[in-house]
Image (cartoon, rainbow over all chains, first blue to last red; front, side):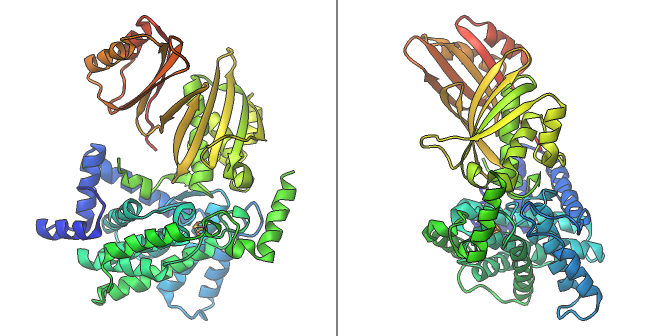
Length: 292
Length: 222
Ligand code: SF4
């Protein structure tokens, strides 16, 4: 089946008595003409690369502009002090999102999910559960299929690039993917997965793409945190039985529509938003001066 | 074609799937189509590649691809030094192009034996690329399929000759385009296939009358 509607995936899973992740896996096998084993091996590779992107973090690295680096370590230290407001899991989620986002800005290896700019969201919610032993590899791979399925639907119905639909399309989609993955990890139903994704996307609707000096640094790294934290809360809501009042596919269509209508200044051109602040412009000038 | 690993993936060196990963793939495509290690490359950057390319490492990514690296190679940030060590001289400049995709590179590369290539390609998002011009002729292929590029004389029956060989080799054509410079002159056939084109079939096609050259790109898994 084509992955172009969350409702269809949910219906297919329920009528066949299978799970959301299985529908996505089967579709991948059909589309790419590969065996289930080959598909799972490839997904395993993605998971290991994701894990590595967290483990290889080095606090002393800095990005080209010098604006990004070291914040993941700061957050870890604050968590270790015992004074953080958020609980153990959430502290790790925040720190991991920062670490992976920073590594990306520093030209380290990451897994685009769905894009490089949003690469911290999914590992931020998944890796802490793996480290604490709350999730095993099999359930994590299933969760990754769920997230890929959600991302595929968004990319079909709307868009996943900041240049096309603003940050709601990147961080918003990543957040929806992560929310669905978490619901799957906790044994939620296909319907709950769809609603978690929809709520995550709704909460970030309208978010503009305004990278300072056009670099995937500011505000990108910290937006990975908001995408991850939002995913956790939406997954918990969905697991509690709370639903998105607006049907999930309609939320996705709406995101695409809002994206198309965003002025071009707010779509990765670095002409509006934070990029257009006096600070943003000064960074841009400094970068230009440096390249001449 | 939908590939869920375009959504979850690729594994790549940051910071930008379009400005870094896509740029590596463009450079690598140029190397593969050249069919040899380039010793000299002149790279024109257009649009956002020229605007924010430096901060995204687009220059280093393109050079890395020309050196044969893939998007997940941790040496990408060092590629300009590596190019010097390995005897590849690269120059960059800003170019103006008409109606090009905002993330476009124009690469002129030359191998030690004098072979040359001129390739204009765009990074279309999520690390995907599209080749728009090859040696002065408009084309349209992405590297998502095995791709056969045949330069031939513009004469009746050439397409049938080539596709017959593919059919004999049980290779199914996914997409195909044909373009010529002028009537009776040079023409270019670009054929994207589902199955890899076996070496024998390529040999047979290359020996057909009126075929001037043949380039093959085998799809890469990463
Ligand atoms: S602000 Fe733009 S570049 Fe940065 S993460 Fe969001 S969509 Fe990506």
